[in-house]
Amino acid sequence: MRRPSLLIHIGLMILASVLIVVLALLWMNRFTRHGSSVEIPDIYGLPESEAVRLLDKADLRYEVIDSVYTTEVPKGAVYDLSPKAGSKVKAGRIIFLTLNATSPRNGVIPSLVDVSERQARARLLSIGFEHITPSYVAGSFDDLVLGVQSLSGQTLAPGTRIPLSTPLVLLVSVATSDSIPHGDLAPYDSITGTGGYVIPRDTTTHILEPDEDESWM
Image (tube, rainbow, N blue to C red; front, top):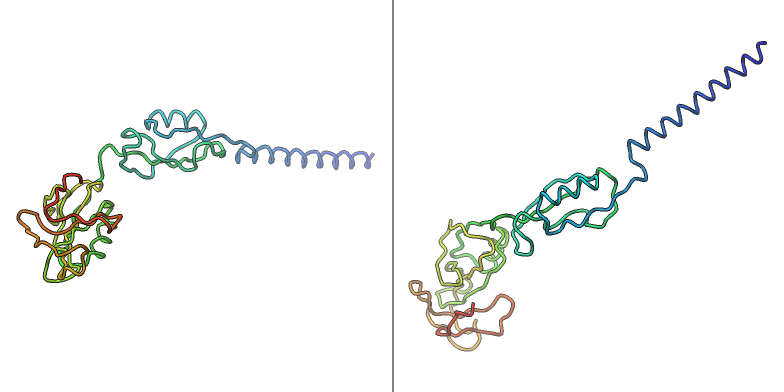
């Protein structure tokens, strides 16, 4: 009688072990959602509320990590997401969103007088300004910034807060006309904002004469 009893106990131990392993695998599969994947919906250009609704429906979470200002999508809409739309991810994954700001981001004009054009451009770029055009004007020294203006000719004093998308003109002094093609520089008048040559940012082949109409800018 002892032998059958021993076999029964061994069988029960094996059965219990198998049951424990099966339950552990089921728990791990549910906990890690192994094999469960969803497709990230295309929410580009959608308002945040609509984007969140679609993410919730897909069993995905979200986190806003940045904002930009652009005219490509409506204000407050989704401009970018990571991972990208159409990617397959596990359910419950956090999707990182970049939204379009409701107003332009501003930057403060720094003091750039008497620094080189290269230093001034690097400083403005580090702040976030992107549209920077040099205007070469007659001065006592080469390659020194005399100030910053808007395209309309308005002087932008240090500390001025303006949208980062604003095009800026760097006034750069040139001591000799040899530094500028096509003749002499007209003296720059800081009061009227006239004189000098403007060289577009992307080319140095087109030079504006001092009296040329700059309304095209």
